[in-house]
Structures are given as C-alpha cells and as structure tokens.
Image (cartoon, rainbow, N blue to C red; front, side, top):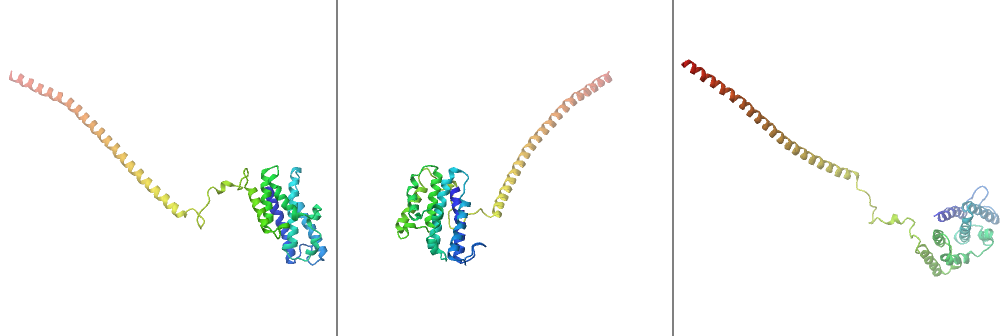
Length: 268
C-alpha cells in the first residue's frame, strides 16, 4: 500500500496549505496571505511544488513513473481545489497559471484523468499497483475532482463504478487483510469478554468441584486400603495363634504322660 499511503500523506500536506489560504492566514514567514495576488499565487505554487517533490521522490528508477503519475494526479486535484473549492485572493491568477502547467507543461488534466481511468484496467505490471491506483483515482473523484464531468454527474458515477470493479477484479484481493473480516462482530453494541469477576467465579466453582471429587476419591482409596490392611493383620494374628496353640498342646501331653508314669510308680 506504499502508493496509497504516499498519496494520502502528500494530499494532507497540500490540503493544509489550501485550508490556510481559505482562512486568509499566513502560511509561513515567506508566504503572507496579505501579499499581492500574483506574489501569493507564485509562492503558493512554489511551496506545493516542494511538497510534491519531497513526498513523491523515489531513488528507484523503476518507481519513478509511478511517482510521476501520483504527482500529476495531485497537481490536478490542487488546481481544482484552488479554483472551485476554496475562496482566496489568488484564484483568478491561478486560473492562468495552473500547477499542472508549471510541473508538466500541460493544462488538460480535466480530460486526461478520465482517459487514464479508462485505460487503467488494460495496464500491465504489478497487479497491486493497478489496484492501488484504482483506489487513488476513486478517492480523487470523491475529494472533488470533476474535470470535464463537472456538469455530468452520471458520467462521474460511471467512472466511480468502473474503478470499484477494478479494485475487486479477479486475482486482486478485495480487502487488504481479508482474514480480519472472517469473524465480524454482530449486534448494535461492541462485543466484549465477560466481566473478570464472572470468570473468576466460574474458576472458583470448578476448583471447588475438583477438590471435592479429589477428596472423595482419596477417602475411598484410604478406606479400601485400610480394609485390606485390617484383613491382613487379622489373618496374621490368627496364624500366629494357631502356631502358638500347636506348640502348647505337645507340652501339655508330655506333662500328662509324666504324671501318669509317676502315679504308676507310686502304685508299685
């Protein structure tokens, strides 16, 4: 979008001069709105020429024709702006000393601009440049350039439709950043995230549920392991008792046998 950006920045600088002239204010120390008509017009033209050269310069020779076209478009717009859109003292002098004539040696922009619009679709080169120029020419018409169509608004509308079609022709993206429009907001009011307190409330509820479930699982597990442990302890005690009983019973039998033998000896 380098061409479009350059156009907008340069137009803003040029328009600020025209606006100052319309208000009858001093442009700067060297251009006083109270100067003679010719002096004021000449100084204004010089100042605008400097802006065009400064903003629309490119060190790349391949881009120079594009910069020249931008310069021509803006010169044509400045001429119409100073002749038809604002009221200032140098208007009559400017009519015979157009900025287009000063820079390009011609005074045919009123017709040439529309011829360039007609042939824009047949141009070769970078499709992005063609798309940007379609947008630039469309803005030119919207900013008040009428040229030979000043009293033929229907023709002007036809050119605007033509430029819109060029901007959306196959092979060129209709939007500079199409992905930004894939999820448009709807409704009369901007959609925003819920209040943070609501989010924290839901987080708190989820955390509480998690802790309760974890506690239930832990208690159940403890009870299961406790039951298994108790069974193992009981089995161990029973085994030990059986072993102790088995060891005690033989000793008792020996005592009984000894007592019986002693009794028999006594009887003898």
